[in-house]
Image (cartoon, rainbow, N blue to C red; front, side, top):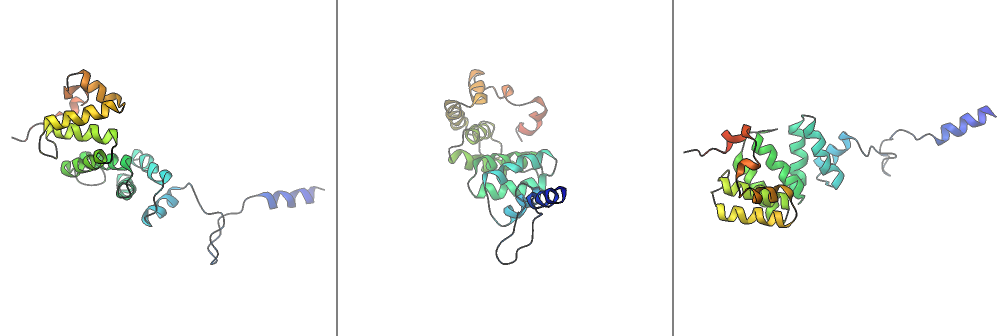
Length: 178
């Protein structure tokens, strides 16, 4: 009886992934970092792979996160566009590039993303990475607030005082160049 039970248990145990024999891969890795990067490098984007970029960058692997977010952003994921902006605006996984950061924010805003609208609105108000246009920037912040973005409502409530939403530590970054 115990021999039969042991055989049944072995048969019920999942087998490790087997290589492709021309008919596909049995039991492929699905939720691993390796699989995410394999999919991204093949240009295959999906919500799970794109969201994985967040955990990758939070683990300090910014160059890898940049690879994920850039592929996903190019595929139209607006959340990945705002993450690309964050990486470019802070020099993570690449050079500090306020122009590229503002461009990612603009693309997310144009796609209708409230966070993209808010961020691009800030870029325009500051003239950071883009020509300064306070009127247009405030209009985008207003659109983000109308869409329910709390931080945009907070900025409106502070009469668009950027100190309300920007940490003191970033003041150097947004100071006028001349």
